[in-house]
Length: 272
Image (cartoon, rainbow, N blue to C red; front, side):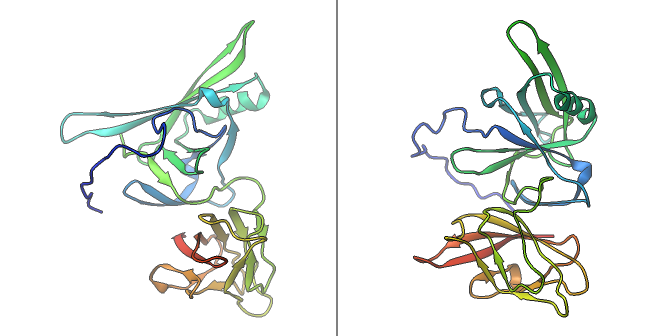
C-alpha cells in the first residue's frame, strides 16, 4: 500500500513521551516455527505456527525493558535495525535453559503496552533478532541481561493485531455441533470441535456479561470429517463475504466492536 503523507501534530495525550508502559510478560518466538505470516505495511495481522510450535512467555523485570530502533545505510538502501534488552532475575535453571537454547535462533519478540493492550512486533522473518546475554552475580544482584538484536536491516516495527499462540490451553473449547461460541473467558484462542454428523454453522458469539469491546478472538480449526463453518452475517463481517471453514490448522481472528447499548459486531482481522 502506498504511503499517504499525513501531518504529525502535537499529541493531545498527556505525557505521551513518557517511558515505561510495558507489561512484564513478553513473548519470544522462533521465525522457523512460523508457517505463515500476514503483514501489510507496518501491521502484522496474523502469525500461524507450525503444528506443536508456540510462543514463549518470559517474565522480565519491568523497568529493565529497553527498545531501540535505528535506521542505517546509504541513500536508497536504508533499513531498520531493532534491539530489545531486558533482565530476568535469578540464576534459575529455566533462565539458563533459555540462554543455552535460544542463541543462534531467528527470533521475534512481541511487547504489550499496559495502557491500552496494544502489541508491537520486533524482528521480521527476513530480518530476525539474534540473542546475546550477560550474567551478573555479585553481592548486589543475580540477573541475566538478554539482548535481542537484528542480524540485518529490515522493515519498521509492526503493530501486532492478532492473538497470542501460547503453550497453555485455549481460552475455551466449543462443543461438537455448537452453533454458538462462548467468549466469556476473554480474549485468546478458542478451539472448535468437528461435528458428529454434519458441519455446524456457527452464527453467534456470546459472553457473560458481554464480549470485550475491541477484544480480539481467534477460532482454531478442528479438522475432522465435519468441520464447522462461519458465514458473513449482520453481526459477523468476513472479508469479501467469504465463508470460513474450520479445517485442520485453519484460524480465524475476529475483532469485536460494540455498535449499540447491548449489541456487538465481529469483524475479520485475519484468516489462515
